[in-house]
Length: 118
Image (cartoon, rainbow, N blue to C red; front, top):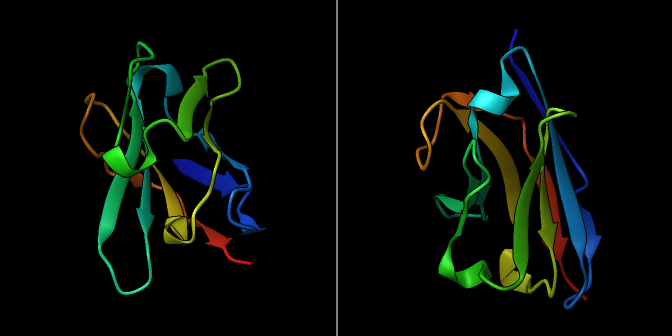
């Protein structure tokens, strides 16, 4: 049974930092591309960051230089380090996995809320 379990969300002040984690199970993690997708209130889902099986990364322009995606294949975990957070980063953040690099896959986590507010 495939599971993606996110953690690390919460309330943070503008300019602060958070690190999200996504623990995966039920599939061969090292052979899957991993993505972080967010959905802000009243908006559609947005691909924020992606990492390939080989460790290459891509980011949406709005988070470049502030967010870092990484993976630890030994721990079956993908991370999203978020620095210099802004109110517009407020959203539910979802972990996503799929077998094709640079494409969203069929596996989704339940999401973790990130709220950036003073």
